[in-house]
Image: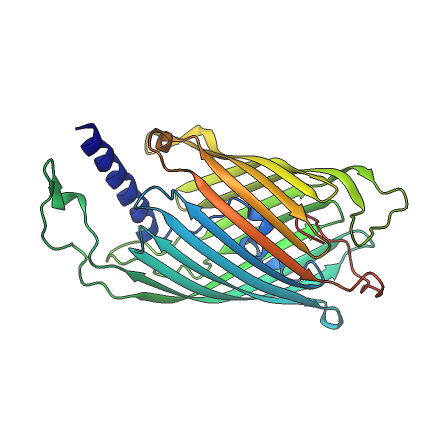
Length: 343
């Protein structure tokens, strides 16, 4: 009976998760600072170099309702146009492939220099998304205490859903501070596989951070095997809301020479959603920075009611590569950029 109850619990959790995806809630990444162009198109080209990023998220790996999300992006900057250009791809699988989504987003950002310290950026994004649903999914009505009863799924004949997606964003920043606001799904596309469902709500995202330099190299220069910031602490905040759902990530990350560590809390514990406290997870991060490459790993420790089930949390791996001039080459003069990624 204990084994049966556990399976039923996993089934319910999985179905709830699938329901969220069917209704069109967005992919989320715990390392939001490692994929800035996913959060806000205004960050495209902010490094002022060619930048490549690959990112993998594995959420709840022990459950059939696990999420597998792959992300890859490229962005660059053209000084003569004061503009950044970029694109990213996302491949998302939910519930052992029950829902598969693929999206391509093209991005543009324009940079304005407000002073010798401050800059403002505005970004636009246009993409195409394809979602497919496995019509062989099972639902609660097909089960009883004895197990699976059989029968057809209520959505057995569902075609793929394809749609265009439009977003925009803005960010203001200096060498140590950044704050940005973005609006995703401004055209409110219909993403659902079920009739008579509201279009995808607009997702509003606010992101901010401030890097506190505790110690720097005395000469102010960075060698090819070192960094000018010897020791820095960066508090960050990331708030987003979409439809009836909202969430905040609060925490900080620490950089000591090339070593990176971070700690974040996700949720709004004083708020309830459907009688459940909005208390999701604590995120731990560790990473390392080379002159051109950074690699980071994070783990989500579940603190919600899902902690009663062995989900094995969520894992993310990020690799970012910046094609910057060699130490002997004179770098392109550029405005200061927020350094929450390799720079």
